[in-house]
Structures are given as C-alpha cells and as structure tokens.
Length: 186
Image (cartoon, rainbow, N blue to C red; front, side):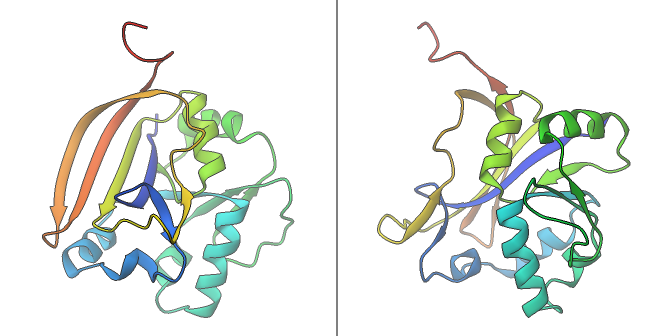
C-alpha cells in the first residue's frame, strides 16, 4: 500500500503564494533546495489549474524543471484533453478520490500532491491522506497573499511526526491527519 502525502509551501499566514513575490518567496536556500532534490522517488499529483501553471513554467524554464519533467505525474481533470504537453504525465478524468484509492493499492511509488487546493480538499475530506506536510516560509503576505491554503478544509487533528529547520529560517512540519467532527468536547 502506497502513502498519499499532501505537500504545501506556505507563508506564515497560510497563503500559497503572493502577488509579485518570486517562487519560494525568494527565500529558498541551499539546504532546502538540496532536501527537495533528495526526495525519494514519488509520483506527483496535480489538479488541472496547478498542472497548467507548472507545465507552463516547465515549458518556459526547461532546465530548472527538468527533474519534475522526468518525474511521473498524474493530473486529475475533466477539462484537460490528451495529448498532454508535459512529458511523463497521465490524465485521469474519473473521480480523483476513487482513482487514488485504487492507486494507493497498486501504484509502484508514493503519491504526493503538488499545490492543487481543490484536489487536496477532496482527498482530505475522503480521509485517504496519510501524511500532511507544510514548509512554512517566514513571511506574512496579508496584503499580497493569494490562495489561502486552508479555507474550506474539513476539521482535521494533526499528529506531528517530523519537524525540521532549513537554512535557519524555513520550518518543515509533517503530520498524520485525522478527520474530526469538530472541536474536542463539542
């Protein structure tokens, strides 16, 4: 059985990116970038919107995105059509929750989401996410922040299983998520 990991990079106030900010809020450092390169092989999971964005970056900056281009990817979409332009990408047009339940049983690699807020919400609501990992960047993007990561999520208890600091400023927090019906004692 493969694991399903939700993976986000966020600002301290919970945004996925900020208007006018560079990727990684301009704070990626050698330790963090080295850790990204050393990830065990996995299959990247995308929703249509994130796929369009990331495949566009890969087309514009092929050298920088070569590792992700070589990696197996699955995009879940009812709007995209084959053939997909980004190499090593499989299109799944059926329900992503049902598809990922099946993939967890027989896929050869661990599965990690990349962004994809709508997809991630559905997977968490279904209770099929094994790990929830965020890397918190030390910025607050209250005015320029776009895409609040956690809006619309179900209530989830998180059991911390790993934490780490990169480059003296970035915080990795990895949890095992458990759906809950509401606040404890309610």
